[in-house]
Length: 388
Image (tube, rainbow, N blue to C red; front, side):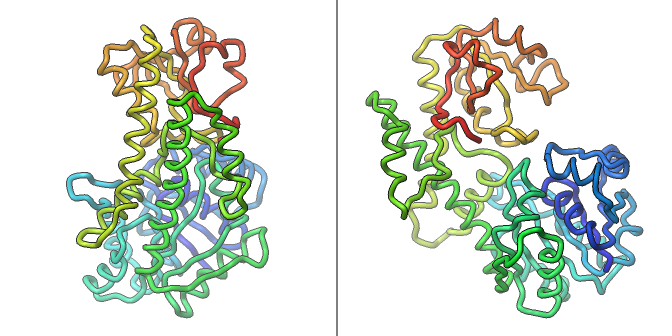
């Protein structure tokens, strides 16, 4: 079995490492630096399990920038390229996925193409009809940044958007390389699988927004947020999980997936989906106003990443908070070890942690950290439980 994976971000690389335990895998990327790192068994992304597997496991994995080499002998080709939300069109930009499919069909018309990039509802059937092919499947991914390989080794479920032999074969490939046994596997149609992805992430965003609004209420009325959340979550129907207040949901998936689902609701009655999207903006505005009420002259931003164990700060909630603060004339400095630049987002980047901690009046941290223990009196956070 020969498998090619196009794109080596969290989704692509975690799938490549997972499957290369038992099968021949080629990882294709346009970034030569990432390709070289993978071939030297170094992870180009921050993921504990990926780093460990690359360095210690015997993997049948090769990375390349050569499309012909990657596609020509593949039985399955997994597409894991980015699909960012385009606010002008109110839809995901699926051009990278479409370009990859065009490239594949020029080289290999018989391989089963599996899309793992997040796409609008209806995309897979639309492109199959447009190209006159029947070998494209959508299979949603449910991974956490920084825990992507772990979530592939212990998957909550495997969903494949087709009821066919090729779909069953693909599901068995994933299951055979996982550590978890007795995995729930669901075969649906492609369009239902696309909807599952967007509705699942929007529900998670709704939960984040709910507990953030609870925290906003408690903060305004000087109530104990932790006590309220604990009391609410003792109800087993609600559960004591995914309930730690933050500056807002962010990262690569939740912001764009909620916006895409809202766009898919065009001409369909709804109130809740729009409320999830708007609630996140309201929360970030509240956080900025709450900081401004303390009248700081210099605000230090401790980390741009959303959570520990991740090196990604795309669409991090802190960026909108920074925008609001700068608009009011507050000086901003940033501490982010993953940045090599001396300036980011129009703000100076402080390289030394001790220097960073000494400069601001307030240090803004989405999550608590032992690194800030000695300046805890300056730290502004809504983190109640001290977890990611």
